[in-house]
Length: 285
Length: 82
Image 1 (cartoon, rainbow over the protein chains, first blue to last red):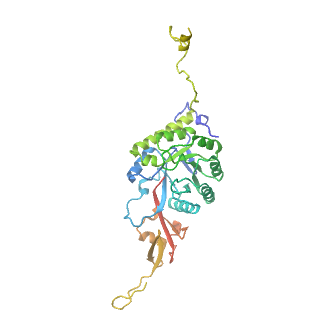
Image 2: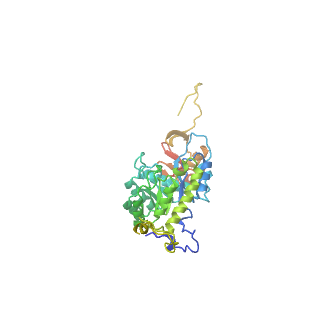
Image 3: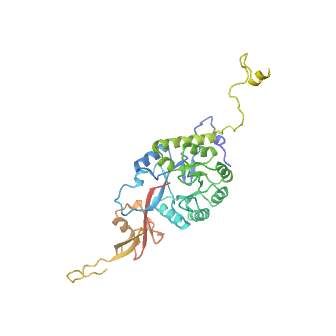
């Protein structure tokens, strides 16, 4: 069971302190994971990553374009000493291609960390549950640290954690849809049921409030790409997402007040000056 | 392939192998190894990974792995993605 950090650290000594996010052999200060797709340029990608404060960036594995005159590579814009690079299997619709892509990415980067996606169809890009389970099992067997993109089905998340996933990453809503976390109750149940690894909301966020809301639920991280890359001003949105992650996480750790139906005065009700009375008392007299 | 030139003499022969490279039919020099293919294509060896017939050719084996007639080769790199 997750608990707010007031049990882990003394807020009186440092209320800005937070435990790091641990993914396999990597320790991250920032809990925002940011994708590198869809930016206008590599320069913009690099600037947005920097402003987002992220420590972990996702990349895709694709055929080398042999026709194009060679331009610079994305890798020249990502400082590997600064960021953990998380290769994905985006675009894979079956177990075999997802495993092959993972094997290629491990050889390319020398990292055993991989973000597994086994998708069902091109319209929804929703994860195929059976393929996702099978590929997770195979990749764990091959020694990968597998961060699994999956649906927000709590039992699915339990099964993935049992298979040894390094992180379970339910979608808030479909990839790139900007709909935010559509089923916060499912995320809450997932957080209750899965102890073994971090829960990271992957996909669907559009606004800072979506990121904030996800962290307020207690998730350990949020992974996003389009929300920054396709914003009208990606650099400003990167800043917004950085701040939202911080605000949401801090809110969770701080422990928000419970919601109540009626008001609860912040100012003392005693010691009012003579002549004032409550409306109900005035009406009764 | 063997072609007679216009003078009726056999042209000098360059043996080549037919392979499928990133989905397209391609010809490479006979006895070429994977490391040479990467060099021939002017790619940075550290920025690519190679699969031959669906199996990874680890970077430590690129210099030894010869290409054979009919091989299917995939050359991949990292691109922006989420």
